[in-house]
Image 1 (cartoon, rainbow, N blue to C red):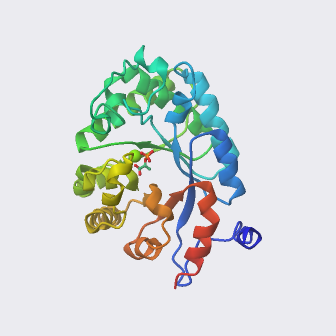
Image 2 (tube, rainbow, N blue to C red):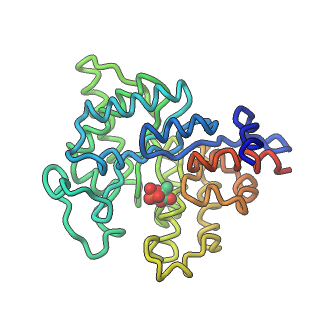
Length: 297
Ligand code: PEP
Ligand code: MG
């Protein structure tokens, strides 16, 4: 079986009827990037940058972040890399985050608390440091930035304004950086419902089905007792996905799926049919999914 799958490593991801899908990998570290390449990923569709922070014993400096992002980008050798800004909250934290610059506190409802883009917009210097590191890595390849847990157009505009500030600062100092595209994670029902308005502001969408499921069905994604309510094919979820893809296509921006649902082969035809441009999945799922897509008529 494994030998058979390696045959798909260098093949195109295209259906029998000629529809191309970009098949990318989700990673949390540079060693995952190696796994993505070994499995023939066409890019990194989701670099979960928070792992860099969670695995450290201090807040990574701009230079430390830059070196990591740059290495990932260089390893991908021209293939696109989407770096998600830190998606940290009271449920995903390291001990040092009680202090500067995070000041994370216990929350009774962390999934709905100060996390993702909310934390970044509140801790502006932390956010700008990360944006600088990403922009600098952009000088070494095709880099995009993805903002997590967006719930309004306003939040996305604020993030974009901060990126512009940082870009100007880097230019003033003559520091090399690349032109990066900015995308919105559609992982809250609010973002999906506003996807027509967000599409007018964004350069791409990436649908985070893990959180989108959690918030749509009001089911804690970590709680084993509510597992039976976590219906990954819930019609409300599929409608939100379809609506989001429709709005992205109407605005002419690419849309991908980066949550676990992206590797659910019983939905691959649905995704292709509604017009999803990209699927980003764990490295080990890339080859099976390529086989699946190449067999869709
Ligand atoms: C998601 O929510 O689907 C997603 C891809 O992000 P994470 O799993 O890191 O929350
Ligand atoms: Mg998420």
